[in-house]
Length: 332
Image (cartoon, rainbow, N blue to C red; front, side):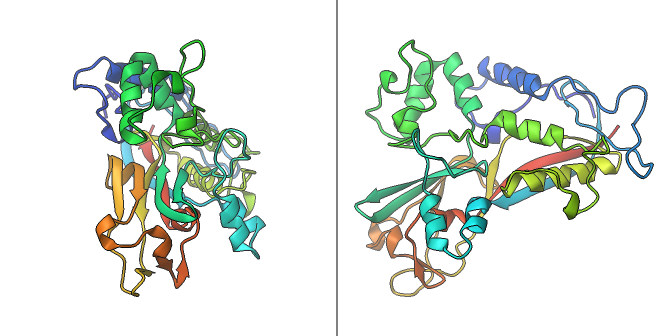
């Protein structure tokens, strides 16, 4: 396969006119993040434990490759660590799952964040995102006014430039409209919900060295108590053990690919309608997803029951959303 001429924006977003220099700029940034790593190198594959050779990670913008398969790596959006730590108190797990802000101990660590909009105690809407800070930072550096326009469209039309920037005019990803008063993109930094962290996870999952090689689930060395990291770690290593090279499938990004409202019921006990709305992205590659009951229905999210239990937290919905990144396997 010839070299990839340009990396696509996440979910092929068109936040600028077709032909804008931004798209080349974004592609260059992705290529920079992927790096010039070429494994296993001109000398040929290194032997792995057991005598078999393993592949490596590569940048398709710099190296030709022969794609043979794609693997969709999936995990649940709600934080696995909370469900494990509070396995005997699920109420507490979902309470803690709402923590997202500047001063809080953020708990939304699965490359997936959400914000619950309430009126009093009643839930009116839940917004989920898998958009990265990197993409928004690159947009701001290219055209700050466009970023402000998007904030006004997605969150609140009254937002001003001063409210999303630092004193020196630079972009502030931790502004109120992306933390306490709204949600636009990832903010969690421990562990990092960043594009750089996702790329580093895949690059570091190629099991070339004896101390990193994974033969089965018992040898997973990824210490993160999340669903995402161990899933990516063992799946990518499994591909590399077949002497295949690994990279990301286009368009590079983290996505919501499915949401299941089976068994959810209205106040009268009948099945809910389709109250999901993709705001950014597309089916199978959603970046911003909202769940809100139309006013004509006469009830709100808090009146819906899942398995006979009323929704009390945004995490009750997050537990039913599947997040994904797609890897590509290629012959060297």
